[in-house]
Length: 281
Image (tube, rainbow, N blue to C red; front, top):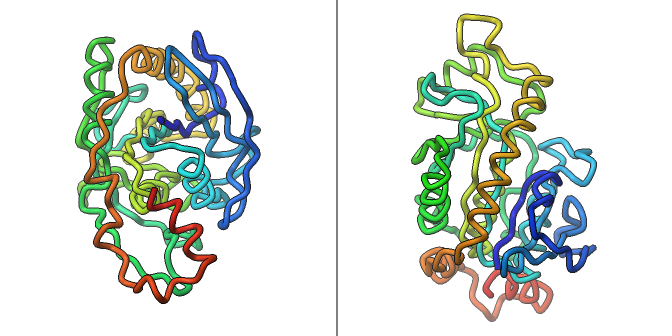
């Protein structure tokens, strides 16, 4: 099953029929909002608004572990995110779409970045955090739709909630980042630990603040306006994607824990085993 994390506006797709709105608790707390289960063009889907139903959660307030765990527990095996980002490259114009394949984790705040610890030790490889089958699926349909889509880009994730300084923006450019956002970490890495095939579709809302022209520097009003404009294109792309079969499951991502858990089975408690079994599914 495919899960989609993004704003509530993504649910307004032609032919979408809501089956249920599921309020769920997890061993890691409650997700951002009740999870919408729906049918669309022959697919059963899960939708979750990352920032809550009323966009009431700041990036550092999102319970990323509960979000990923709840989607996995409800049957998700593939996960597509939709996110707003700032562009760090002249060629990535505001309004463009991006498929990152690499991440630079610059989160310094107190976000829970792993399901493991407290007696269960695991080290999951994140060398290739994004599923190539999902990105190829999105890219092929974007091409058919005539959309501008930048692939194989690097996403820098910062704490927020403030917007960055010009020096920070130039630093990110210098170290090879292409877009900057506040929400994909630890989401992408938790998806890896949960053995989910993950990709995210980013919308460039602005040029961040690295350009010399102050008129090009980001404001919240511009972010919201441009994201809203691009959301209609994103919904059209999702509708086109759902008119096709889901991409094949990449077993590399579905077996990420095979060699990652170091704690012997005999040392794992029944409580730990219950949540670990969900991740292992």
